[in-house]
Image (cartoon, rainbow, N blue to C red):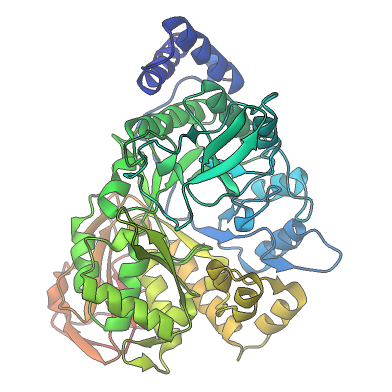
Length: 580
């Protein structure tokens, strides 16, 4: 019972910080009891050991839509599960992007949080996947679909949801609000109670919740409990930075938002000790880092600065900006880690590169991606200007050349990017289309007129299997090389997400870092030639311990002399280690 008392006090403190205006002490007490009861936390599940890492070097998460691969007369989630078992056996986690009924944004305008989209499958399909791998699910917590029952009840002014949405007045000060899109912030909506101006951070089909109303918080805690019951182990808090709104403020990263994340972590880790929260905050790097809190907010944060910086490195042949950023990144405390990715269902965000890439570098990066077939999406700044927000392009196409144009080294560059990402501190997340070497989908882009569609290809199962069966197929080659990298990575203790990491100084053409296992028995020196020219480096620059045997995990190379030179072909990576 002591544990329950501590938990009650923690939850109450969170709620007092969130609702310090508008809620009485009695209301806070009742809300505390409701949330704990909703999560079904008992005295037998109340003890949580702080600063525990619920992950290891074996954790690799594949990012996919439920229907990224489809087969006639079979539920896509069944097809996906079958395909993962056959081709991605070395991957122990899967992030299935929103699998709920939706009205737009490829799932991120949720109509019903309690159902699985019938076009994908059912809850038993979700649980089946979760029974074999860690399952990450989106908690689309900032907004829902304008076609949801809740919003229809808002329009009618009665029923569940009638008071769940944030509204403003036309003369309210919204000039400081940070926008990720170019659409107007407020949506004029006729309701039974008159015309309302509904807050829409992303689109007018995505209507924002009002967390000033504690009932909204209760609803989402119910949703979390349901997802835990069906096997969800990792919760991705989509667009959480915008959760709390306040007039005459930026309405992003507000203190109440951080406190909500802390509250959800407290509830989730007491309900299921190894469950995790990951915050999706596509914002400048310094702001993103704040979502670790004091190891009491997100277990993981997306390393949003990595994709633009790594792509910039490989197309320019200089690791200057990538190295500067890596040196500035604090090691994650126990109980937290980074979520590393270089491609996803979304585009390559440019806001996380603000303050890290100079304007001329950004301009060159954007123009190069356009040259390679990419699309550029914009947002509206405070002064009403249109500013590039993200680059929409398949990663394989993004790396098909350099700033000088396309070349024949695209595959090598693509594999180099993943060798770098897989070695870095944190948990790697790999988009299914990166595993398969999928190219830009211009047909889907044309059919939808939606920039992000260019990197959301839908494979026919039989056509894909046929491609993967041919040794000369690009898709076969990419999957084979990626699988080899992943299998080697997951066997190395030095690649634990929280293992020590130091940046190496090997000039601008060689990007390197040193990882050391938590027991200090294994070291791995990860060195990549990020240029299109052969590079040499001398082993003595690595300060290897001379009484140990050193060899490369990726190539048949053994270090015979600590003063020997090593030749790296364009975009070649070595993982030099002292321990298998």
